[in-house]
Amino acid sequence: MSETFSIQSYRGEYRVHFTGDIAQVLATEVAPADLVVMDRVVHDLYPALSDVLSERTVMLMDATEEAKSFDQVAPLIQTMIDRNMGKGSRLIAIGGGVVQDLVSFTASIFKRGSDWVFVPTTLLAQCDSCIGSKTSINFRETKNQLGSFHAARAIYIDTRFLKTLPAIELRAGLGEMFHYYLVSGDEDYRWAAERVANALDHDDILHAFIHRSLKIKKAMIERDEFDAGPRNVFNYGHTFGHALEVATQYAVPHGIAVAIGMELANRVSVRMGLLDEAVRRDVHGALRHIWTADDCPPVETDAYWGAIRQDKKNIGNQINAILSRGIGDMFKTPLPDDEKTTGFINDYLRGQRWLEV
Ligand SMILES: NC(=O)c1ccc[n+]([C@@H]2O[C@H](COP(=O)([O-])OP(=O)(O)OC[C@H]3O[C@@H](n4cnc5c(N)ncnc54)[C@H](O)[C@@H]3O)[C@@H](O)[C@H]2O)c1
Ligand SMILES: [Zn+2]
Image (tube, rainbow, N blue to C red):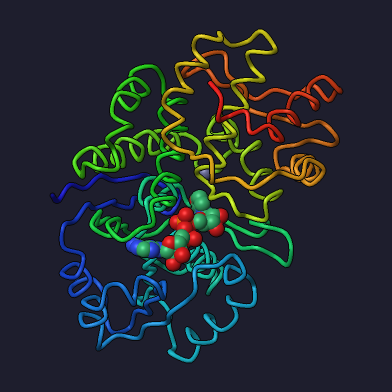
C-alpha cells in the first residue's frame, strides 16, 4: 500500500503518500534539526513511534480547541528560536486537525513561512484537512478567525492510526467525506452511498473512501486554492453545521454537524422548491449512517442564529448558505431572513428532525 499523488500549490508541488509503515517513514523522514509536535493521545497509544523518534525533539500537545490558540503559538515559536531553526529544519505535525492547525499556522508566520510535514492520525485529517493549505487558530472566544494559506511540504497517511480512533470520530470523518461526494456528483455519491453501511468495518472500503475524497478536494483546490469562488460549494452543510457546533459548545463533532447541516440544507432546498423530495430522502438514507440519536444535545436556537449571523461568508446582514438543486448541483444563495424560514429551521433543530426520514 504505497500510493502517492501530487498537489499543485502556490508554494510549489507537494505530495500525499499512503504508507503502511509510518514508523519506517518517520525513521527516515525526520531529521535531527526538525521539531516534532505530537498529539499526546497518539504519543501514549503508539509507543513504537517514540522509540523511532527517541533521538529527535518532540513536543506533546493536547488536542483541544483551547490549545489551538495564540497562547500555544508563542512557546512553539520560542522553542524554534532556541533551537535556531531556519531553512533546512521543519516542523513535523503528528495528530489530527488541532495539531495540524497549530503547527501549520506557526509554520506560516515563522520567518515569513517555514516548512512543515504532516502525519494525520484522525479520519477527518486524513480524508480532508491534510490538503488544501488552510491554517487557523482560535482567538479568545472566536474560532478559526486567525489564519493563512500554507500547505505542508509532504503528507504521510497511515490508515492503521484509525484503529484506535473513537467511533464517533470515525462517523464524523464519514460526514465530512459525504459532503465531497455529494458536491462531486451522482457517480461519486452513488458509489459511496452503496458502501457507507460497511465503510467503517472494511479497511479496503475506508481506504478507498479517503483516497476518493482527497482526489475530489485536490481537483478543487488546484483550481481555487484561496477560496475565491468555486471552492465555496464545499461549504455545503458547513454554514448550518458550524452554527450547530457553536450552539452546542462543540459537543457535536465537526463532521457530524456537517452531515446534520447538509440534511438541513436539503430540507430548506426542498421547501424553496429547488430540490426534489425524492432526492432528499435518498440522501437521507446515506446520511443516517453518520449520526446517532445521542450525538447532539438540545440546541439553544438563539445561540444558533447568533453563530449563523457571524459566518465568514455573510456580507453585511445578508445570510448566505449553500443550497442544493440536486446531487452535484450546489450553489451559494441568500437565505430568506423571514419568520417562515427561521421557524422551519428552529423546528428542525428543536425536534431533531434529521433523525426522521
Ligand atoms: N485546516 C483545515 O483545513 C481544517 C479543516 C477541517 C477541520 N480543521 C480543524 O481540525 C480540528 C478537528 O480536527 P480532528 O477532527 O482531526 O480532531 P482532533 O485533532 O481534535 O482530534 C480528535 C480527538 O482524537 C484524538 N486522536 C487523534 N488521533 C487519534 C488516534 N489515532 N487514535 C485515538 N485518538 C486519536 C485526539 O487526541 C482528540 O482527542 C478543528 O479544530 C477544526 O477547526 C481544520
Ligand atoms: Zn469540514
